[in-house]
Length: 377
Image 1: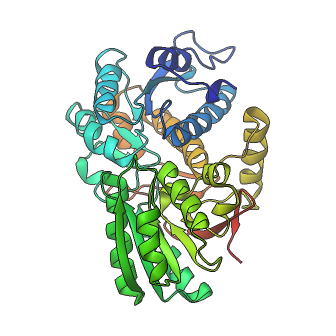
Image 2: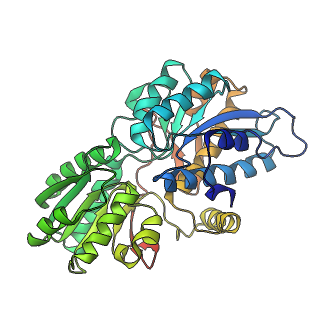
């Protein structure tokens, strides 16, 4: 599948710019930009997001596109690098003249590149940026992903109330804005819920050996390990935990970085029992979601994840804003975005005055079992 190949920057941009010109629409598309991780160790997130965008893009164009023309996406690959994210945003604005940008994938990329878009007065919409402070970058920065501050407390409360978790150890990546912000949220939520923290251990995003931290933790006999990590490090922690012989009852409770089926692919049965909070899960029974899941699987040969679902909904939100703006004008699109109301596969959506998702009531807690996430019983 195209979405699974390794993209260089030029290939990704060319593919997006030429995609899905629906028959019967004007020859010149309305082109928006997307800045995502398409290569490198964290491309699991970026490729899922791209798949979600592209699936929705086909549907938007089949339904008539926007402003009498097909909608198109010019992709730029960051490879997870903040400097590449900055250059990608500059290129999309300065060379491609896009009126709106989707992405970047990670919060630390948004903290680097978001100010560039904001300064140039180009709306930028994150679909997977959940760290605290994202929309505080400026009035042109939006996000459709629920902040960790809205999700993690629900996850931890459920672990306390349903699983009897009373004491935990915490592990977090100390060299990434997202994982550090996730830790801050976890620490505050644990204190508020009265859950004891018996140890706090850190690691780097490129670390592969977690045995020293986990050996210390095992000796303290916690009920669970709370982890703020991206998928590669998170999977490594799960594998090391199994290798060290932790009791099966000691679960890993993850932040948004572990909300990806890829942890099951990498860690295998070591990922079983991992729980995370999510605004979406694959088994959500409403017809719109089930149609999305079926269509996605038919196109890509794999199940969607939360990141694909959020991207899918976001493309429709952006298309609605462009239509409401009546022109591919950044200022008009920014104003229209704030007024969009839409029901998608994640449920009802609108932005708050601070450009965050308004509805935070749909968070569910899901559990990994046999490589798939399902609702925690």
